[in-house]
Picture (spheres, rainbow, N blue to C red):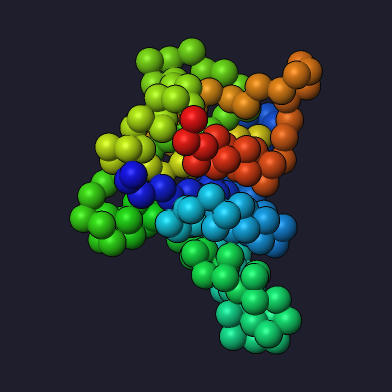
Length: 186
């Protein structure tokens, strides 16, 4: 199987008015998605935010769990955060993967809204792609990935379908479900 990567995008994303914005990093997103990512065999989890102050938040979290009191208090959290790093842009995350494995990953965007385009794929197609090439799955914060990220993507994953019409999962929940689906061998 090819390598699987994820990125939590804080810029460029949209707000509820459709404006392109930068969102703040939340510790729960970093911690919980890292735990899901490690559980499902993700190679690396990038937290993408251009703010230097927000970069310090991620570095402080990782430092606490990797070198501070947190390392002895909760070694499981230390292990999960070992695959996390901050990048200022999506391009930096892509470059990091290319440097590591000498291959550009397929970019797969996620969305809670079904986008009827030629790029839209179901989970079976995503799993087939993953067998052939590395895959970088992009999760948006705020009200979702900005159009320029969607346009840059090679694929757009179909949204998660629940049993009700309500569809507003947290990014942590959506990431766990999608990673479970990608890791499922069936």
